[in-house]
View (tube, rainbow over the protein chains, first blue to last red):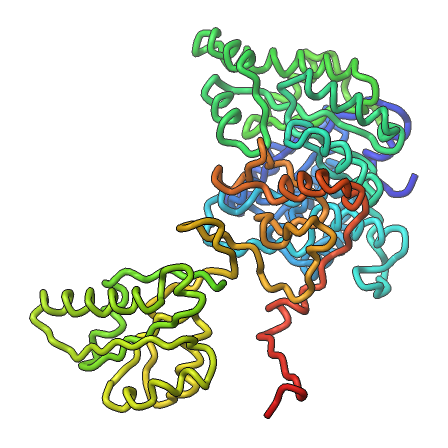
Length: 307
Length: 222
């Protein structure tokens, strides 16, 4: 193993890994982080902490990671290159590692036009792949960008995202290969609603031998309502929610739609588990973290063993 | 060309109302090409201002003139005879033109009538497209002559983000995805292999991040 990461241990032991997303609050509310964290204890291998997701200002990901770490979680620090230049990104990597965070998910981030600070400058000094390479060079060479030696270099288990549903489709696996080549150890995908397209993506990834080199965790988001399904289909960047899924949600009575959404998520987990090369599942239950244990149980995912 | 748009009369008036005589100066180069500040637009703006003041029962002196180029001293000096008799100059030049006038006529207030937008091309009559950010280190040769710094909303160097859908950018439907353009162009040139290689972080020190830039060439000095 390359790091102290629990997620790395789980994956390298060949276990089916489970991660879940935890969105920090729009403020300094420690108790809400703790509350979300407690519901996830014991049922996931690691918790992703989002970084000002959809460009809405929230508690810093590094701080929320530290709080979750204190509860006994294995945090995955999400970092977007939208808001910080290479000085701040590298500095925060040092800080996060100093606080015991040893997983990072390198992202570019949604454009600031989606959030509540539309007039902000978009930094984009690095892109997500360059950030992956930066973290890898810290771990493997002990250097920062430009080659300066680091005193106690962060040794992080490195993640990146893949969106099997964005265009152009043929490029998606090339980009995945670039991320792997740059140093990604694990991949968490965009939320999967279109299983056919995800399977095509996985076939291409296997054909290129990428599933041998990187652990792919399939992204799953439970839908709360048909409204949310429609919103994700039309308003959220890079999503593919098929008509069929929307119709299925719409067919359920209003007070049963949440149950239907959970049923779809459970089925999705069971199906992606059967796809060769899928190393785990990544649950993104947006402001619905408390449903994660129930979803995992229904999907037949056992409680987390200590590795 | 440098592409600009004319400001609303109300905003211009807010800046010039305090003066009793205004010299309105156009620029017949870039901003004429984008129909914002050329000879024609200068006459139209002067007329519109006169009308606007008349409605308010005001009658400031408004004189119009247009330079071939507002960013070069040789041309700027051609309005020297008109400047002393006016309290302020309203410039229809780009930001460079406004500041060049201010350097030459250092005792005069120079007010911008345009919002300067970008370096771009006239794609067709009435359509101008931004396509250069002047980053100071041209990389177009690697990207099929489509600039990832300018045409990608996130300045990505290693391929399209997850928000590219049907050749459109996640920022707005009417923005074509720069990376989609790069890939289609390289594909038609048979050079898609250029995209497989990792592109390291950009050196932004040659861009405006390195401070305002200046070119000095001894061989060109008088």
